[in-house]
Length: 170
Ligand SMILES: C[S@@+](CC[C@H](N)C(=O)[O-])C[C@H]1O[C@@H](n2cnc3c(N)ncnc32)[C@H](O)[C@@H]1O
Image 1 (cartoon, rainbow, N blue to C red):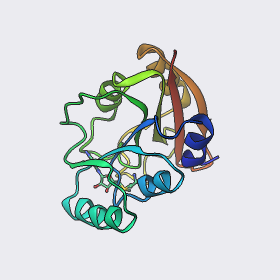
Image 2 (image 1 turned 45 degrees about the vertical axis):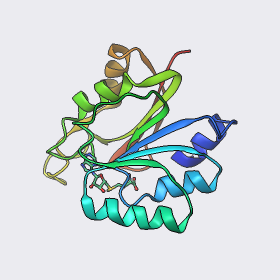
Image 3 (image 1 turned 90 degrees about the vertical axis):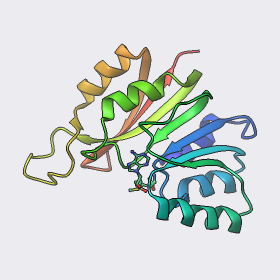
């Protein structure tokens, strides 16, 4: 199961699901969600070059997601979301992964999903030292309980990353 297909399966009504991707790069995931009929798309991307490239791409696909260029850690959120997905950057040294996840989970609607990829703690320390934040399934399960979320799936075929799907109860 990939993330986009999971979202597609879970949200039958694509015109109402409010979806936020953090660290969206040049926007491939947002474009794919748009292609599959999702209309309420949001994104935050820190890198100006990637952000500008994404605007080109969104023009090409005639889509108008609400996007901002900035650090996801500094953004004040006024919206609530059905899906929040910080993807492929939370392991970086300049990101306080747990503080970010704790802040994001507060912006989930009841029944909403937090989808995040985490580097496995089983990765030997001398391998890929740039991956500074590493956690086990037990760690993630513990955090999810602190946040009042349920850990509903773990996809671990992406070793050394696992993808975790958390849900806020309805
Ligand atoms: C490897 S790319 C992943 C792109 C996309 N999410 C994906 O999964 O294909 C990671 C992106 O996260 C962005 N990024 C890194 N730190 C960030 C932060 N603190 N806030 C927002 N974006 C960030 C990087 O600029 C980069 O474009």
